Length: 519
Image (tube, rainbow, N blue to C red; front, side):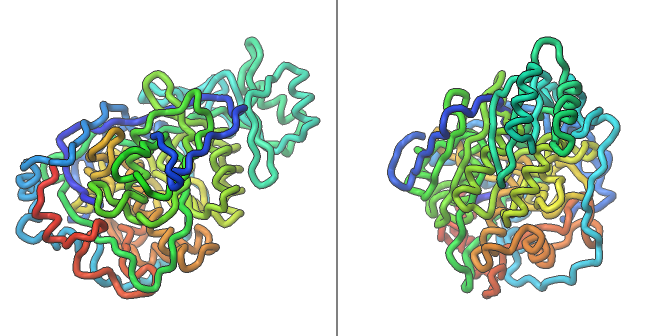
C-alpha cells in the first residue's frame, strides 16, 4: 500500500439515512463466490497544522466539507509519481520514510502517568438536549443535517412502554436490540417537537434513555495535500513471528465493490441493512481494501488473510452518504451475532445518549471499537463515537508525520496513523489517493487485530495500553490533544521480532516498490 500526495480533490463521502429495517439484512458471503458487487508537527507549527489552521467544518461539525470524489487511477499509473517522490525528499533514501513510520525495532517507552480522559466537554454551540442537539434538529456548519427533526431514539423501553407511547401518537419506525436492550426509533405526529417527545418517553419510563435521531457521516477530506505537506512512503507490514491467525474484523460503512480486483476472492461477508436505500460503494471499498485487500494487487491490504464482516449501514441522501443511531445499533447487533471482537468505525457525528448506551453495551461484550476522530478542524467539537470512553479515537498524519489539517483535536485522541494521500481501492476499478481520519482508522484496526490474534478477549482498554506503550511519540511529550499517544507502530506487536528489511504488504522489496511510479 502506498501513502502519498495527490493533487486531486478527495470526495467527502457523507451520508445516508434510510430509516426502515423491516426487511431482513441482505448477506453476501464473497468467500463463497456470490458476485455483486502516515518532520513531526510541533505545537508552534504554523498554518494548516497549528492552532491557526482553521479551515474545517467549523465548531460543532466534527466533519469536513464535502468535495468531489477523486478520479480513479488505472492499473498502469503514469510517470508523475517520480517527481512527487523527489519533492518529498525520499527519492534518495526511500527507507528513511518507511523507518520513520515503522522502525525495525520499537523500544517501548514508559507510559506517562496521565489520567485517561473519561469525559469530553462540548461547546455551547452544540445546542440543547441530553445529546447536545436541539429538539428541532440541528444543522452543522457544513450545511449537513445533524439530526432528523421528525423522529427520536429511545433505549430501555418495555413493550408496555412502547404501547403507551404509541397510544399518544408516537409511531414506531424501526427497532433494534443489543445486549438484551431494546432500541426504538419513533416518528413524531403532527407538530409535536422532538424535545416534547423525549419528555413523554421520560414520563413513561424515567430509566429509559432518549435523544435526537442524530446523523453520522464518513470522515473523508476534500483534498489530498500539497507541496511538502505529504510524501510518498512505504509502510512495511508483515506479520511477525508469534502472531496467531487474525480474528474476524468488522466494519460499519457504506457498500463495497466486491468485484474490485483487490477484493475478489477475499473472505468478505457483506450485510446490507436496507437494500432499498443503500449507499454507494466508494468509501466502503476503500476501507475494506485497506484492511483485507488481496496481496499482490494494486490495493493490497494490511491483513489480506483476515475475514471481514462488513455491514452496509449507510444510505444515500441528497448526494451524500449518512447513517443514523438506529442503523449503527443494528450494525453492532449483526456484528455481535457473528462474534466479531474488532470493529472499524470510519465515521463521526454528534454526541448522542442512546448511541452511547449502545457503545457501552458493545464494549461490555469485549468488543474493541476503533473510530475516526473527525474532520472538523482544530476548533471543532469532538467527533463521536470516537470521543466516548473506551473507544480508540484515531487521527490522521501525512508522510512527514504532520497532523492532517482538517483533523479534529481533543483529549479523546488515542493514536495517530497515516491518513493523507493514502492509496487504496476505488469502486469500479483501479486505485485512488484518499485523505481523512476515515482512512487512518484501518491502520489502528489492523494493529488491534494483530494483538487480538494473541488475546481475543483483551478489550479496548488493554489494547490502548499496549498500543500506547509502543507508539512513536509526536508533538508534545506524552499524550496530547493533537496526536494522542503518537503514531501507531506495527513492529513486534505479537512479541516476535520486528518486521523485516523491507517487504511491503504485497510481498515486494521496498526498493522495487518505490522504483515504480504509481501516480
